[in-house]
Amino acid sequence: RAIHSDFEEKFIRAEIISYENLIGAGSYAKAREFGLLQTKGKDYIVEDGDVIEFKI
Image 1 (cartoon, helix red, strand yellow):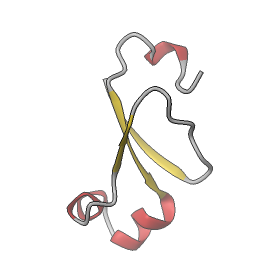
Image 2 (cartoon, one colour):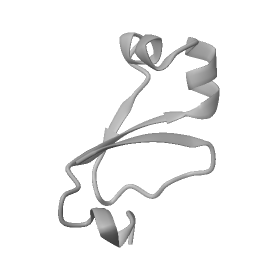
Image 3 (cartoon, rainbow, N blue to C red):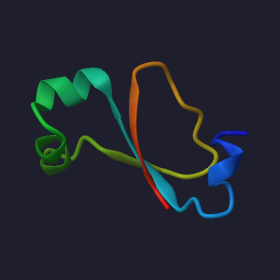
């Protein structure tokens, strides 16, 4: 499974950013402002260094 089974029924989407991009932007808000966040669904495979905000 791409996401933990506890999220399976209520999961809507996740916003993903690499740790390096987040640090480079200086904050999560700036990363969003710069368009660095990617919206992914249930099929996304988490990669090393991903920072994830789950939307449920």
